[in-house]
Image 1 (cartoon, rainbow, N blue to C red):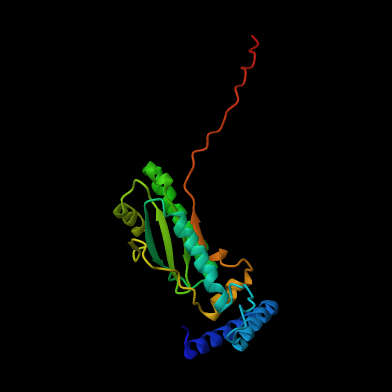
Image 2 (cartoon, rainbow, N blue to C red):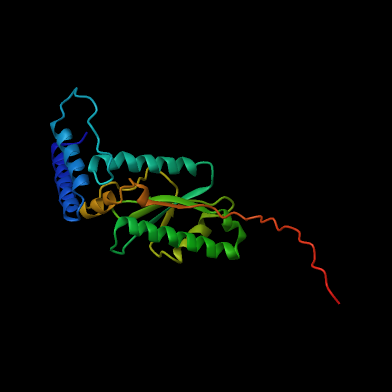
Amino acid sequence: MTTDREMAKLYANQEEAIAALRAIGEPDIADRLECCAAVRRERRHGDGWPRLCRSAACMWCRRPMMRGWWHGMCQWTAEATSSLAIIPFHISVDLPDAARRLRRALRDVRDRTARRRRRWRDVSCAGLIGGDRLALILVAHDGIDRREVEDVLHCRWSDLVTKSLEQEEPAWAMSPHDAACLGRRRRGIEPLRIVVMPQHDRQIAVPEVAPLPVLV
C-alpha cells in the first residue's frame, strides 16, 4: 500500500513533469496529466476506477504500461534459452534516444558476431530501458552458452551484468525531464523498447534467362 508520504512525492513529481511539458510547448499533455492527478487526489473509497490519462509522462499510467510490455517480452523469450543482460547507460541523452542508440548497438554486435559464428544469426533481444538508465535486455541464445554471450557483449559494455531472469523489472520512476520527453513522443512506452529480431536467410529466386544470340 502506498503511504501518504510516497503519494506526496508522486504528486510532486507529477507537478514537475507538468511544468516541464508546459516549458517545451506541450500544454495539452500537461492538462491531461493535471486532470489525472486531480482525479486521483479527489478519489474516495468506493468511487470506482479513476479516469486515466494513458500518457507515458504520467507517474501512475506509465507503470502498468511498462509492466505490460515487460511481461509480454518475458513470455516471448520463455520458450528459448535466454539470459538477462543489465546494461547501464551513462550518456546524458533523453531516454528514447538512449534506447535508439542501444538498439542499434546491440544489432551491430549481433551482426558482426554472426559473420564469424553462424549460430549467432538466431540470437534475438528484447527489453526496455528504465528511468534509472538501466536497460534490462532479454537475450534469446538457443545453442549458445551464457558465458559466450557475456564475453561477446562485455567487449562492448564493460560494466554489463548477465544473469538468470528472476523478479527484475525496468524502473518506471523517472525524472520529470525524461517523463516530459517521453510523453512528447505521443507513442506510449514504445520509444523505450529495444527489440532485435533474429537474422533470416533470404532465398531470392533468380529467374532463368535464355542466353542472347551471338552474331558472327
